[in-house]
Length: 73
Image (tube, rainbow, N blue to C red; front, side, top):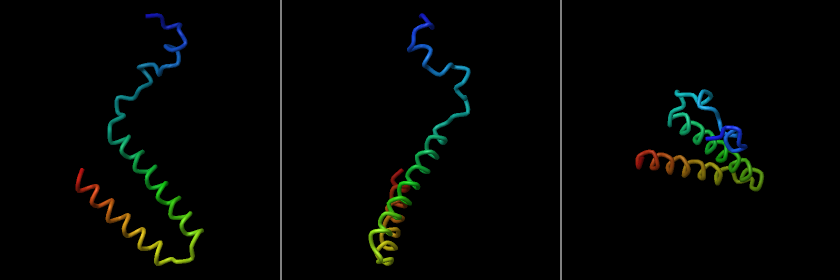
C-alpha cells in the first residue's frame, strides 16, 4: 500500500475520524437540511401568493406527513 499516491493522500486519515460520529449525527444533519428545504419552499410559496391560509394548510399537511413518517420509522 503506497500512501504517496494521490488517492491515499486525499483520504481522511483514521486519526481524524471521530469515533463519536454516530448515526444520530447524520440523522440530525439530514433533519436540519430537510427543515431548511421546507422553510425555503414555504418562503418561495409565500412570495408567489398572498393566500396565507393556503400556505398554512400546506404547513399543516406537511406536519401530518412528518408525523406519519415518524410512526413508520
